[in-house]
Every structure is written in C-alpha cells, then in structure tokens.
Length: 416
Image 1 (cartoon, rainbow, N blue to C red):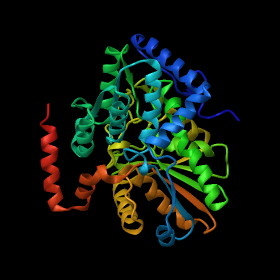
Image 2: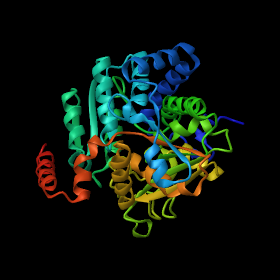
Image 3: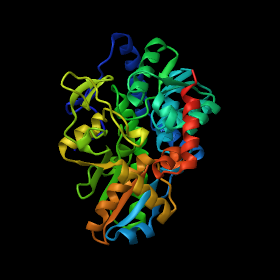
Image 4: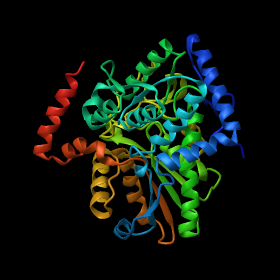
C-alpha cells in the first residue's frame, strides 16, 4: 500500500498541488528541496526527536480516563495529552521541525498565521529559541477572543499584526502572511501552521506531526495489549488529526474519526464543517485544491465556530483524499455540545481541553456507550483550554467575566 501521507507530484489523489504566483515558485522549490534532503537524512529525525524530548516534554502521556469511562459506559477512554507539550498544544511539534529546516536554509526571519493563537505562541517560542525575527498574523476577531495568547506572543518578542480585512479570522490571516512572504522571500520562511496550503506544506506538517501517532500506537499497545477500536481528533486544517491518525492508516480494524466545527448547526450554515456537511465543494484557494465552503462563483462563505482554531473555510488535501477513500469518517459537533463536553471533562476528569479538542471529546462521548467494555478508544487532546478562558466564561454566562471580556476585547480592538 502506498503511503497516504506521501504526495504524488504534490497531489493526494485529486487534492493538493501548488497553485502559485510566479514570484513564489523558486521559494517553494527551494523549500521542497530542503524538506526532501531533511527527510533523507536519518540524523535530521534524530535531532528532531532529541529537541522535542529536551524542550517540549515528549513523549506526552496517554491517560486512562476512569471516571469518563464509567460515566459513558462502553469503551475504555484514553486521552493523548498533547496539551502537555511546551506552549500547550501539538503545534510545538510542527514549528520546532520547521525551525530546524529554517536553520538549515540559513534564513533569519519567520512569519506565521494563527487562529486560536496556539500556533502563534509556538512559533514565537521557536523564534525566541533559535534567534529568529518573528511576525504573526491574526484576524481581528481572533485577537479579541484569544487575547491571552496575543499577550504571550508579544512578550516572546513577536510582532502581532491584527488583520482587519475580510471576515477578520484565520483565512484572512493566511492571506496576509502570504503577502508578506511574497515581499520578503529571501530572508523569510512562512511557518504554515496546519496541513493545508501549497505543496510541500501538507506533507511537511503531517510528517512532523506523525510523532503523535507513533507514540500513541506504542503506548496503547503497551497499556492495553491491543489497537484502539476508534481514534478521535478535531479537524480544523487537519494537523493534529493527521498526526494521531498517521500510525493507524494501514490498520483497517481501527476506525479514524475526524470531528469538525458544527457551530450553530449544519442547517444554519453558521459552521465550519467541510467534510461532514453538504455545504462544501471542490475548489482552489490559498495555493491548493481541496473542499472549501464557497459559493458557485468560488467566493468563500463566512464560517463560525466557538473554537477559533477550527474556524476555517478549507481542509487538508490529505484528509479530503482519505475521506473520499472512505478511510476517515467525519462528524461535526455544535458549539453547545462542545461547551457541554468541555464542562464534563473538566468536572469529571480534571482535564481542561481546548475548545478545539473538546469537539473530539463531544463525539467520543456520543459513541463510547455503543461499544464494548473490551474496546479501547483514544481521544487526541490537541491543546489545553487556558487560552479559551474568556470564551468559555462567556458561554457559561458568568457576568463578572463577561464584563472583563468586553473590556479586554475593546482594548485589543483599539490597538493599531
């Protein structure tokens, strides 16, 4: 079986590619060559693993959730603790890998886009460690709802640019980052945060995140003596899902379940479900071909999610290919279901998943009771919920926090 994470001339089936303006072609060819050389060098992966072990606390544990297992009934529930990575999410895996590539290429400046802010914080942290100049683009809406992460990016020395164009969310931040890169290619590397965009980014991000799946496979066999029945992950662009799914793609007995943002419900069109709804169609945008939430003229719809990191119009071409092959099943969870799943996980297990990760928890809670007590399921907790404190407090209706949130949002919105 061909490796589903290895593109054929930049494509995964009919998805992917590199649709680029001529000015960026040489830069992408240079990046592709540097990545191919790193993959062919066994010492590069060893250096990568050593860096993650020393700097980012890998391997992250696989936690058995005794209380949730008892409450749900059915399958035994295990959680992969990517929230325990340095900076609080799986994002560190990708940015540290790309940081090693940047150093190999001899560039001195990095730029990034971010929605929930975790990728921005991770990139700013990597830049501080490697001594790179750093600029992070973030939609104005996300700057307001993720102000703690904005604070830490700035403290780490990054320049945070609030993007006020378009819908003022993740897709607009990506557009601004590409504009910057086109103007500064010789000195700058774009640390794209998810498994989307032009080739080689989808394959490159999936490669670095595959460390998650490698660890889960080893850990679950050591703990239970069997492979999991199902593996759950939230899906925005797709990096954490591909990371945890990667080690199980050849195991047909393991069902892989991606959970997208159902927002206010698929019937409302206020969501970000590309593969779990009928609202998306095949198109080309931001340099690659995949399913987008767009109209008949290719204009992108506005999306909605309580989780800033899932609020995106496209999806990884690798996941789109795996969906069409029938290898990954996609579901969606509404904002209300996600907030309820977060509250349940916090109160019953003492874990605080990010709102993004809570989508995977919500779907697992629906399905675990249908399985046997002999079955094992794994939920990828891709990040921790500290960053979501204002959004969650608002969702819970706490009046004191609501007033504080409004004041913080107003202060960040007034920044130039």
